[in-house]
Length: 289
Ligand code: NAP
Image (cartoon, rainbow, N blue to C red; front, side, top):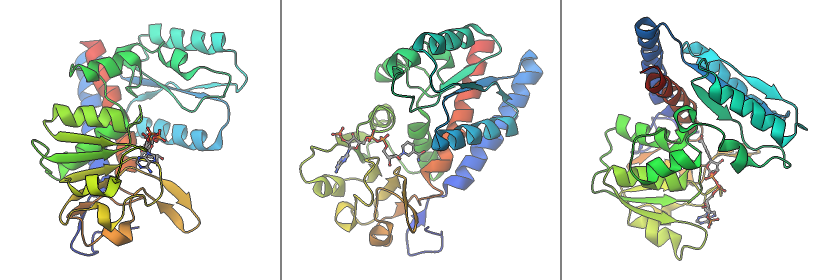
């Protein structure tokens, strides 16, 4: 783990930023309850008993409760029929008490993730993963944005990293992270390049960037040769190894080259849940009018 004392690089403290977001959300929830008499409620849906998903969902539920969002969790059996899971989603979609719906992924193999996600109305899609939410983002229209990309932008904003006109390289084009992040950066007037597994000379492309964001899911993919001196390096990757967690960036190699660097853990990770809370209160505000 990188601590703020190391090297000349400024370490972007995701825990501190996430704490600020949580405090803001708690205030917004209070104000919303005072104004409308209604409280935001998040329905997390966990299908089965995958241990990692259990941990993620319980962290999300705890974070919700801490800021005053109602916890409307549903646990569904691993062997649930798709029609039954769909019926639960339809019920939650129609329930006014439920202002946000989060279907925890991955799902058991017999369930169709895309079909089930599409049952979540765009205004309750706090993960920002439905086609409707992706379409709104692609057209630059208002909507709920995926939490990890939103967390990356909030972290950069908290450190006043300028994005307008900046050369930003995003490594990864997944539906969850790289693709929406690239579109959100475009909306912020960055000049965006998206790299993926077929990119020729990845390091050379990354070296051009003022800001390089690694979301490839490959441990230590980016090393010193991929970072221009002074560049901002955001590491979205998380990998569990024997010695602890590591990211998609070789932190030891870039620590004195990057101007700013997100640690793993304690960088983008904490921002993701914080932005889920922000999305949930935003969704409620839109629904309560
Ligand atoms: P993903 O769905 O596996 O997508 C990985 C992307 O990286 C793909 O677009 C892939 O290219 C590209 N890629 C793979 N190998 C590459 C290489 N050698 N060079 C360049 N690009 C390469 O992963 P994801 O869901 O986006 O997640 C990425 C990482 O972020 C993972 O480590 C994940 O655990 C982490 N993550 C963290 C958080 C958080 O809260 N901190 C949240 C979500 C994800 P192709 O499209 O060509 O296959």
